[in-house]
Length: 618
Image (cartoon, rainbow, N blue to C red; front, side, top):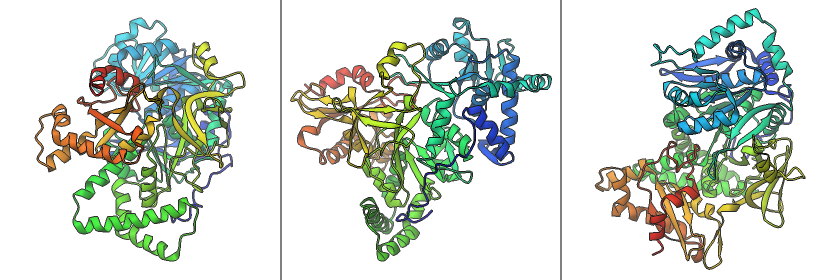
């Protein structure tokens, strides 16, 4: 990696990498250009298995041929219900190559959600990962008259299944090979018939305030946006990236799959969500995009490891991170870094900081990208002090992912950067709402013309629901969601996300929801970091029998109160959190309180724990 004070190695590019104004056109152009090169890797039975562009193309041809043999018609929808694995990508591209519409379903979704999403999207082919996901599909199949076939990626545990409505992926590929031999021109004819204005993918919103809405993105919008991404965070065929966020979420679909398809960046798939820390160290990505929760977990791991280190190691770390912080401050201020400080930083890297980066797995990273949720500015500064620039991007499902981004040449922690070159962004003078306009903006919500009209005005501006301010340099800062801003009983406007981000900077806090609308003071619902708090309890001989009892111990309550006091010290008295309670249930993505991207659902949490919330005001 180049020196922190010289960020010229992170330059956007406006050059077109691949021709094509649809995803299939880009894919086939990529195959022609990069055929024998490795595109994807996935760990299977402890061994990394590589997929070249040619191998990927062969699989796509066979899957697509299999779909065509089943009568899959242009404009029909196929849904994918699976974790983030290579088969997801192959199936997605195959569906699009047939001229179909591809829709992703979170693997954590309940059976009722699977039914709703398949029904709303008019899914006729459902591709599922394994027996667990197949069970959901079979449970609702009778209620989905349009569903013709279910395709299973992994047939382990299903060897004896005899169901004419269910096919293995292998069997589908065999059908495809035979079909392609009999109809050698049909698949390419279908791919070439795709038009930029054709609907390509559906991305359903997380449904925190009602049923999920299917955001419609066209081929032209996807191709346009993925080219635009290279003007924000350029990548090339020498880069290594990780693919681990849900592919049905716009962040990984665009920033992972389609961006790698366009640039040729290698995609490495983690074994499962729990192995991300180990896989990062194995892969050592050169570019790394993640959500704030991942960055917070890495920081927490370092903070906990430091507490277990020797006094000499702690002193060395404090000195080294201090040197990094001084350089980071000068870089952020746009000041030249003196030769003496540069020399100290090289020594700090050699003694400490390079080891910290290796502990995380970011020692080869040219830059880090964070998005999908707000992040603490202090966390951005910490990574910068390690010598790795962190660039914050902002966008949403409806903007096809990133719409703004912080350039490496001028990082401003706490800001989401100026508008990306491929769209317009402005702040409504009356409401403070952030508005976006451009070819990347979605075409509307499936089956919901009234909701679409509410969201995109007559001038083509998308109303994002986020409130922000823009500085003199055109850099935006998110204040909060319009619906989340708190007005206390005393009339004070409070943006809860600022307090929540500071709380999540603690290694002992995973998430928090600040409450106080029409209340006399602020309170908080806090979800602890199980691993770190358990370790604290063990190190300090705190007795507990399970997760619930851990949250109720006086020592843990005192620990979290200390973290709260640290945060409160940074805010005015009227903005300080007076009381809190700890969620005593260990939540996962399957629980209704969390979105599939592991964020607490503010309104649902407040409703579900209304008794505990009211108790904090008595």
